Length: 518
Image (cartoon, rainbow, N blue to C red; front, side, top):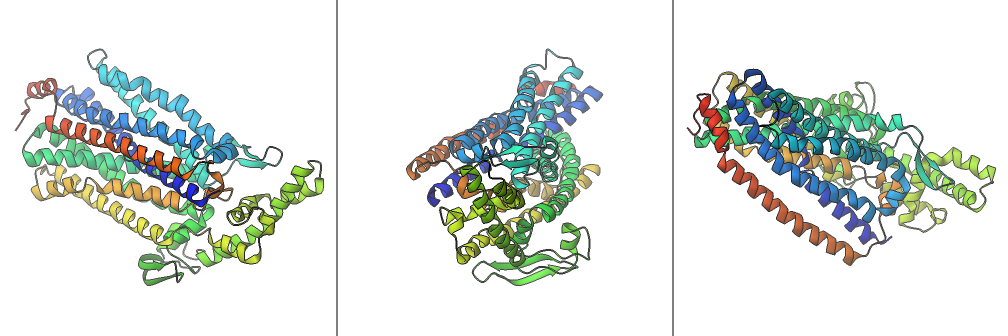
């Protein structure tokens, strides 16, 4: 496989995934914020809360449409750009995606129309139920997609079949309850809730700065403050759980994001600052916080945390074992009744993927010399500086979000919604959680390299047989098309915000004694 084809295929999928993830978290969070707002309307029967709910539902709808459009494009890429990946692991990877489409997406697609057009046709409780089902469907979609992604990070419940030359499910329950998938789901969803809360908080703050729609803005800000504080705290706590799962399943990712070249003895410290150097394989000016990494990674202060050098040595041994597995597999292909070869393969089957890493350098892994094996073992190290700084920026933004929502919660509790310095901060903070979420995906996906499926299938083997011109053409077309759609969406959102609540909603607000426009 031409390395340029692999790199461009990765670039195209990365652009699609990062672009899609601009819309998904806002949909996840806004859906449940709508449930909260409409629940208050149903319980209090105050029309102002209907105004609040319908206004934010409009922004949810604009975002929802483009999220669906970009998600469909991304799923098609598995067959178009990653055909061998789809062939090799499609039996496992495809199942959660199929369930997501048949169950979760159909659920939200069925109820979303009722949510927008059923206000006058359904009872208050009936419409609240519809809104709740949209939220459930949206979040179930995330669950199944992250089960699929979690399996790529930690491929449990599946086994390679030497007769079909493919991975096959042997325990679907293990795929469903994969600890990496579960940790990714709760962490990702709570991040989405935080994004939605910042979005609502920031727009509400903008209205209050302008002195517009004060009744709607204050109530929205109150909901966002409480919902956002709970979500921001959850992101940090559940992110800690994600770090713990790396210790058992993706030790190299953990070592890379810490730029930890040498094994860290107990009690392992967390690097608060440092300047990693790939060339020197060393981290300069490192400042560590004692005990913290041990508590996160091992839940103890008496266990070491493996460093990059140790893990590379382990990978080198596994590549050697993988070559033996590959040799046995070739003998099985030539003679399926060769029991000795099957016995050898069973002994070394877990390292077959490591043997396949050599195909980047030689067509037959059995022809690789010691120097090539050593080189391939270092391929298991992801981009350390990217991992190191992505994690620290993401974590820093997470802590800022806790401070932001803690302050917001305090101010709304004291009924000081219109504290000007805070309103300015709330508007300025709107992009921050999106930056953190995108960096989280960078950590997850760059940190998995060089694997399409951790320890099973190298990324270099998963791509389709495309040409460089074909890939550049589709990348340019994708960028132009979805860039244009992004401009349209931002324009629609800004127009909706500028317009404010509809005339009908303003009437409801006036009936409740609230000023339509202050």
